[in-house]
Image (cartoon, rainbow, N blue to C red; front, side, top):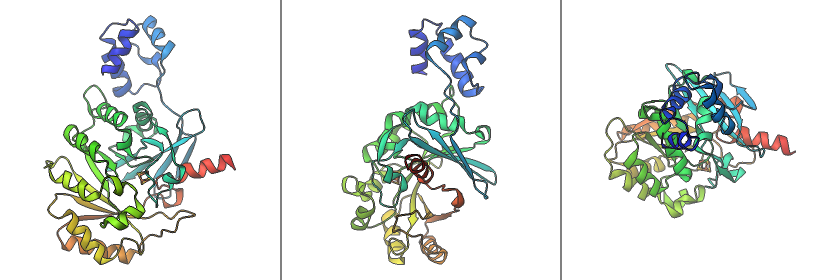
Length: 334
Ligand code: SF4
C-alpha cells in the first residue's frame, strides 16, 4: 500500500486513489486501467501514461492427463522464461509459483539449477503469475516452490506475501501459502518473526557430508543449524513447518537415512513430505522405487513423524521445477 500511496502522490492524484487502485487490482481483478471506473477519466489517463495492469499471457501451456497444467511466462523481454504450475486436487487448487529466473543455489538434482541465475523477479513478476493463470479465481493455495530460492529474493518475496495476505490486497489466509527454502538462515529468522505463512525446508539428506554433495548451501547454512533455529520458534497450529525430501535411489533412501532424518527433527512439531523424483535427461539421479518410498515413509511414521508421500503430478508435461523452461530455452537456442 505504501508504494501505491507513493505513486498517487507522485502523480498528484487524490490520496484515496491508492485504495481505489488496490480494490480494482486485487479484488475486482480488472485487466486494464480503463476499467477503474470510479477514478476520473483524466486521472485514469494520467495513470495510463506510466503504468499498465501487468497481466501476462503465457507463451506455452502444457496440460497433463491428471489435470495439472504448466504455464510458461516471459520473465522479461530478454528471452527468459519462468514457470508456474496449476495443480487441482479434490477440494483444493494449488498454484506453484517462481521467485527467480533460474537459480544460483546449485542443487545437483535440479533442472532450474542447470540454467544458472538469470535474475530476481520483482514482487509484480511474482504476483503476475498468480493473477495471470486463467484458473486464478479457483486457486485456494499458493506454494513458492517453482524456479528459484525465494529467500534469495527476500525483499520482493516479502512484498508479494504482504499483498497476497493483507486486507487491502488479495486477503488470502497465511495458512494457504507455503514458502519453500533450502535454508537461508538469516531470512528464515526474519520470515519466522514477521510472517504466519507456512515454511517448507528442502532437506533431502540428513547427513551433512552427503547433503553438501547435493546442496552446496550446506557449507554456509548447515541444516542442523536451520533446525536448531526453527526449534526456537514455537509456531502455533496455524503455521506449519515441513521438510521436503526428494527420494533418490541409492542416495538418501535407506532405512539408516530414515533413522538419521528422524533423529535430526526429533521433538520439532513438523511434517515430512517425501517427493518422487522427476527424471531429467543428463542427470544421474533416479527416483526411489515405490516399495522403498513406502518403507521409508513407514519407518518415519513408526517414529511418530507426520509423513506424507506427495502424489506425482504432471509427469507427462515436464512439471518438475525448471524442466519446461529449460526445454523451451533449448528449443529456442538450438
Ligand atoms: S532446488 Fe530450488 S534452491 Fe535448489 S537449485 Fe533448484 S530452484 Fe534453486
